[in-house]
Length: 183
Image (tube, rainbow, N blue to C red; front, side):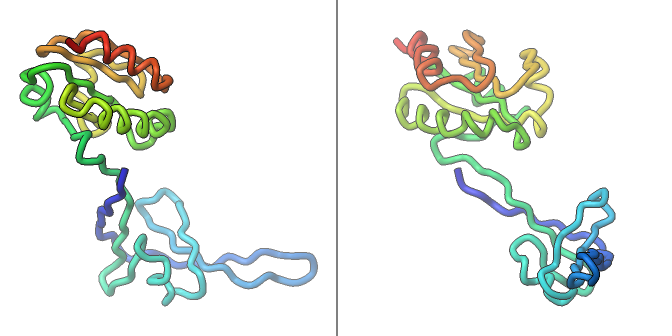
């Protein structure tokens, strides 16, 4: 899985310094940038306010504010992304078996199972189509299929849900589920 960066512009950060008392003397000042939208999340500045650019690619300074870049995971070429608007055409109208991984970026078990899904996508190339659906970005489809916890892997054949695997399971469990629907 590769990482892509999405950047957004924020209003200027407020800078404040904090000091810590260490025995009888004060330790060196530490500067933090605090974004109003972050709910108090602090970004530690390495040396001074002018060193905001030293923590790139996350934050770069501009006169009008700050540009914040966040890493977002993207899938390999084998596992494609499906969402609420592409669901019917990519999953329900597909020929042959389709495996859909319902996941979210904040989900630890989803991250654990992701390499297995990518391995299986390579192993079953040409036999099964693999898709990932971010449940945060596309909430309608998981709701329609009663996805209550993630990761959930569903297998569809000719537009009909045939199997669901809930949780981070071993590769052998996924393989046996997939093999049931191969002709």
